[in-house]
Image (cartoon, rainbow, N blue to C red):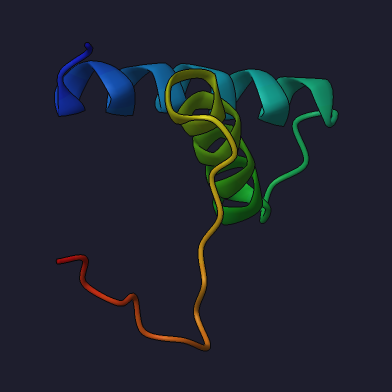
Length: 60
Protein backbone atom coordinates (compact mmCIF):
# COMPACT_ATOMS: atom_id res chain seq x y z
CA UNK A 1 0.00 0.00 0.00
CA UNK A 2 1.24 3.45 -0.86
CA UNK A 3 1.69 6.19 1.71
CA UNK A 4 -0.46 9.31 1.60
CA UNK A 5 2.55 11.25 0.35
CA UNK A 6 3.03 8.78 -2.52
CA UNK A 7 -0.67 8.93 -3.43
CA UNK A 8 -0.56 12.73 -3.40
CA UNK A 9 2.48 12.73 -5.68
CA UNK A 10 0.79 10.34 -8.10
CA UNK A 11 -2.31 12.56 -8.13
CA UNK A 12 -0.16 15.66 -8.70
CA UNK A 13 1.62 14.06 -11.66
CA UNK A 14 -1.61 12.85 -13.23
CA UNK A 15 -3.28 16.23 -12.72
CA UNK A 16 -0.38 17.86 -14.57
CA UNK A 17 -0.72 15.33 -17.41
CA UNK A 18 -4.44 16.18 -17.64
CA UNK A 19 -3.53 19.89 -17.74
CA UNK A 20 -1.11 19.25 -20.60
CA UNK A 21 -3.63 17.10 -22.51
CA UNK A 22 -6.24 19.84 -22.18
CA UNK A 23 -3.95 22.24 -24.05
CA UNK A 24 -2.44 23.85 -20.95
CA UNK A 25 -5.52 25.99 -20.43
CA UNK A 26 -5.28 27.81 -17.11
CA UNK A 27 -8.12 28.04 -14.62
CA UNK A 28 -9.02 24.34 -14.47
CA UNK A 29 -6.49 23.21 -11.89
CA UNK A 30 -9.13 22.04 -9.39
CA UNK A 31 -10.97 20.12 -12.12
CA UNK A 32 -7.74 18.38 -13.13
CA UNK A 33 -6.84 17.63 -9.51
CA UNK A 34 -10.25 16.14 -8.70
CA UNK A 35 -10.28 14.06 -11.87
CA UNK A 36 -6.78 12.78 -11.13
CA UNK A 37 -7.76 12.05 -7.53
CA UNK A 38 -10.74 9.97 -8.69
CA UNK A 39 -8.57 8.08 -11.18
CA UNK A 40 -5.79 7.30 -8.71
CA UNK A 41 -8.10 6.36 -5.86
CA UNK A 42 -10.09 4.03 -8.11
CA UNK A 43 -6.84 2.24 -9.03
CA UNK A 44 -6.26 1.31 -5.41
CA UNK A 45 -9.69 1.30 -3.80
CA UNK A 46 -12.15 0.52 -6.59
CA UNK A 47 -14.86 3.00 -7.42
CA UNK A 48 -14.26 6.21 -5.46
CA UNK A 49 -17.04 8.73 -4.93
CA UNK A 50 -17.45 11.82 -2.84
CA UNK A 51 -20.87 12.35 -1.33
CA UNK A 52 -21.20 16.00 -0.44
CA UNK A 53 -24.92 16.14 0.35
CA UNK A 54 -24.97 13.29 2.87
CA UNK A 55 -22.79 12.72 5.94
CA UNK A 56 -20.85 9.46 5.98
CA UNK A 57 -22.31 6.92 8.41
CA UNK A 58 -19.88 5.27 10.79
CA UNK A 59 -19.67 1.49 10.73
CA UNK A 60 -20.09 -0.66 13.75
